[in-house]
Image (cartoon, rainbow, N blue to C red; front, side, top):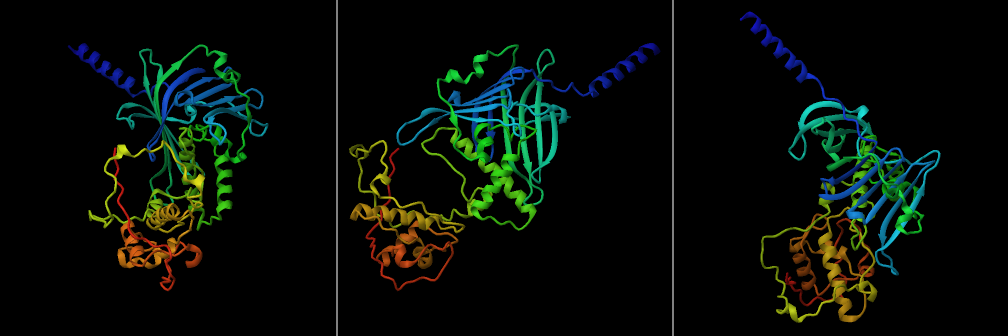
Length: 448
């Protein structure tokens, strides 16, 4: 009986000792294929990708959206990167085009891995990831560009105890300005396939049948434009972010109150540039670009959306005059800019005056249809003078209140008569004659 008890106790000690050992840190194949998704939680953009990585060839390739956009990173010598995208101009529609940038001795180009550097990640136990699945968790934290960044990789094991990547998260936290994550990107690994060989043709750009040309954009834009993973996977490349943010600050005359705010705005800028590049990879009918708002938070952007909601059903607009939408022949597209019916781009600045801009744009279009003349009308007049109709100038307003004021006062003055847009509340110049009369406004009826 005594010997049996000793055996049981020893067995328990063995089990405890084994269970406390950390798993073997993952070692990734030198050649692999990945099918996955990059997710930007702040924007709900999901980019599906296929990736080939071959360290023996010093090469990698990432395809987005079934190959409509392709990125090659080839590391022999100083290296070279290729980007193949559809391009639309006034002469061509969705023409597949190859752009190229060459590495230098100071900035060589190499293959892009899809996993973080495991040497710097530590095992943190079994944790639940963002998909609600428990897996081995490896993490590290670094301070980059003045903010704390956490890199987390979740890993499962196959029947042979080989590591299988499941989920990766980059979370950039700013602890000096408003706390909390300000830059989060996730990668979901749907399928990881280690292989013994990848055909050389996979990395042969000449198979695309295109003549590659130099990238037309500034040097500071090249990393974002040619390698969308470079500043997501640890260790991150940040030199291009520093250079591009400096260019942004100089272009728009930005002045920040402290080094802390400078770091905070730079982190926001990087997040917003990522969003811009992700949208542009989707080959939409439009493209996005960086403007003076690229360092703003979501809350700051929300302030600019100044339309005041109302529970009132009746906005005093006349009914839509057409009841049979099938009788109206509508073209697939119609660009009024070609007819001179649209003014140049306007900017509401930091003022919550979108409600006034929307109303004035509608009036400018209606006036053009009536007279054939494009008259630039004054948003500032509506902001300054329409407070008596439930509007609050730079603090928001409603289309209904704007239309009511314009209708009662027999129109709205032109900008060259009233004065330029100020982006601030100002004195109403009620003495001016309003020579753009508004007789009525209608509610559009949408037929889905």
